[in-house]
Length: 313
Ligand SMILES: [Zn+2]
Ligand SMILES: [Zn+2]
Image (cartoon, rainbow, N blue to C red; front, side, top):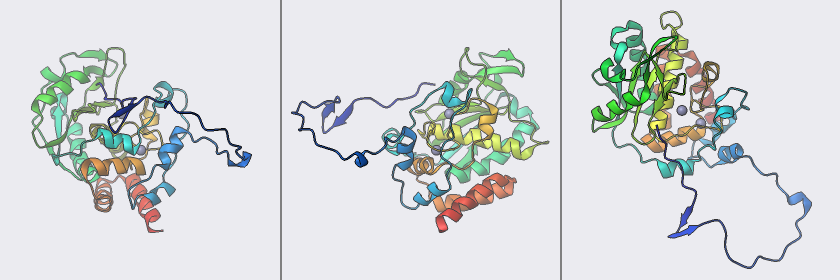
């Protein structure tokens, strides 16, 4: 789905600044060689951006984004990243306090799909500090309108599902997310997509087709589905892909890259979520740690303990 991109001209006090000012240049001054500072990279600038009070200590335990390798998201889709100021300009804090999940197509008939959805609900509620409820199922006749086949079986077009969600979105929705066990494609030229969300209409869709068997590898399947759900819902709250830190908001092009992302947002993406939903970070850590523990997602418990440790020092 289309994204709203930041405009390139800057409006200052009603005047559009186009990059140059017609003034006489000052006389050149001698600058001592030692005063020259190396230019910071875009990622370093984003990592150095001031955080809300109480989050700065988290930068001690956050992992700066590792270099992108061949086939990784940023190698294939170079991105500028989004500053806190850029997010503030794009994000209207949510008025609705409920995330609605919509079981879609085959999910109703799949015991494994229904189980993943049950497990996801308390994790998403704690992470975003919003209520999570379900809407009636979206029929396969609507969701699978542009069905095509691949080696996993049927594959549905994300756009069909996103359009259907817009029609059933309740007034008090902070976000609406369809979940299906059917594989997805976003465009006839792509082979698949884990999920997709609208940046400005707060609807999204994700697939469980590539997460694995929840009965055999519950923790891995839960980690993958929670990772995709919170990433896509993060987009609905105007978070763009994170390029500064290793973060669940990193774009990912393949399963290995997706699996290597942490579960906890980086300090800057957490600050963006605070802005979007008004969440209290301390309450979030306490409730999410308990939800990770109840779900048996030990990686999440460990990540939160590291964050809490850093904040104590
Ligand atoms: Zn994304
Ligand atoms: Zn991030």
